[in-house]
Length: 324
Ligand code: AHR
Image (cartoon, rainbow, N blue to C red; front, side):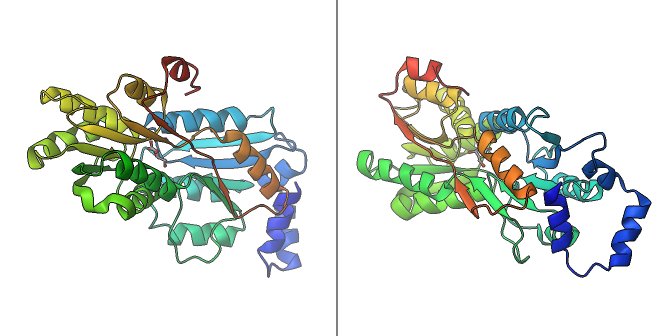
């Protein structure tokens, strides 16, 4: 496969003797590229960060539906269960397996320097998916595909500014240190940060969102709105609000991000007030990018997945037609 040859060339000062030595040893990767069992399939190691939310499940389904053998991929998919150490281990395994392309969704932004340097030294190209990294490694990835999290926060903030300028807001943060948390918070707070009376993380899960809101209802009895960084935590918030004898969407308004079916159902049911979409269905675009990277073609440094936003005018038919 051309991509594999091209990245070997990019590794740089490898002596001819060393290259020939590798060939003589008949490594498994060489037999793969030479028409072995995997033929011309692109060998992809994909480290998904977890299965914490409806969004993540939809994203995983989209990736798996697009990176199929029929479409030309040999996919090694590993779920890290929201633990960075699991992701680092998976990435090292992919290097040991000498895959053609490594793709991963980093659970948080920092802590990748060492492993990204190891991948860079191996010459295997990296495609970042969904979230971003903050690293000292130069040119750590070829391309990134995902949503504009900061814009999502800004869009949510602008709705609040226009529709609830007096709201007292509790901000339900996603996994602390993740690109989705950092950027959504930055975008939202830049518009209506002066209305935020408290913050806590619900780690992007329904259960932890519920626990965080139970505590917030005690700590901030004056709260009239929750801005949640994803739908799952917002659904947990509904449970906590109802258990406290209050009406979600009225006594305490809820502004959310994602737009998974359960979140949009809460909007139709008037328990959510506004939802900014974060579209998880970009498996086909990812497959296209990975193919180009493996073939050594030029790709854009970033691909932004387009989002929309929904208010309570959404209909049940819209929700029923939702793909995820
Ligand atoms: O990185 C995207 C975010 O991660 C989604 O908004 C959230 O639901 C998921 O856990």
